[in-house]
Length: 339
Image (cartoon, rainbow, N blue to C red):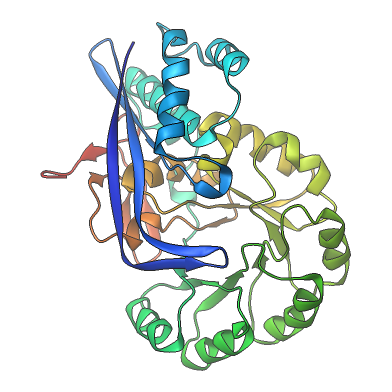
């Protein structure tokens, strides 16, 4: 098993801003595993909010490299060895885990979704995200996104309600709202009824992730379903959240790849929770890896590749909110010419 790590520089068409700040350039990595004549790939969507960057990811991958399995099917044993050395840096582990699943499905001669026994025809529609911006820019983005049936609106400033009102005045699309933990309890309690009146479907992470008591208080009073994103990473998080939200947001960058994401799905369903599959700003390499799990979810927010100025990989197909899973074995992702 040979591992190679290479840089992946991504740029979005517009600055992507949320309640915690904004950026236009992302320093990701690609992990490539070569085994038995096959090549498996995974993306490292390192996120500063979680204490990760390209340098910390490279260090983690270097620590795990001597422990790599000789057989890609030895996932559990490899995980135990690796986490005994370093348990963290989930974005880096995501790339390794994804690349191993890519190799397994290639060896089986089927796409990953089929290896998992899933129904590619059961993919929900994906939302398309409008980042925080002034109204002039938001209006331009809204025009660009008119073909998408579902919009996710990033909020977290003093004009949140007016922004959603103006979007609703111009659009009949399904609206979802994501505060990224940017509201206080009082703000959320005041805004949620108004957003419900505007037909918003649900709200993601209204409060800071550490405010679990506030989330319980708000969940009991909210007229809208509340989903937890930043506050949910692993399957072990589900029990503490099951009475505080209607749903959870799963991202491979948080779980550390498909393996833990599958565990989280099973735990959440056992507690009767709804599930959304989300993403970071990622190329089609990362988005396609997540999309293979899409049929397990109620809702999708897999739009990171649609936000890019240029996507260096080709994988999941579709557009305008529809995602079509690859039929090639493995992830079905290939580099674009010149990418």
